[in-house]
Image 1: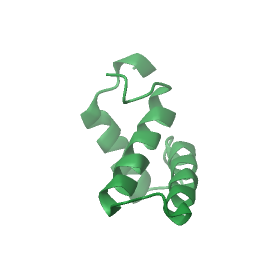
Image 2: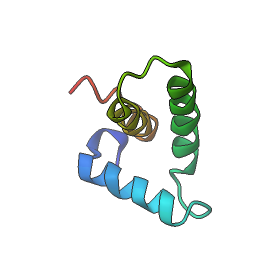
Image 3: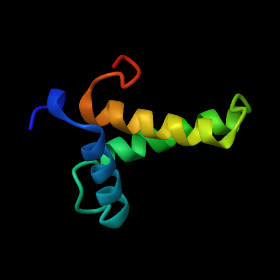
Image 4: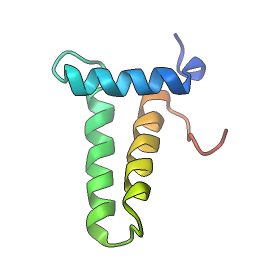
Length: 73
């Protein structure tokens, strides 16, 4: 499947796969990159609500998996 054809459901499935089997999953690099950036954001004090941190992580993971900005529908 090309990067352009990835659905929201597939992104969720990829994220679950990384959590279940991190050593064997293709999305491990995307997960690690998203986690590092999210941790930096959360530590900066810019986050006003915990849901903003969770949403940022998901959007970053999606961006690294698809190569597209998820905010640009």
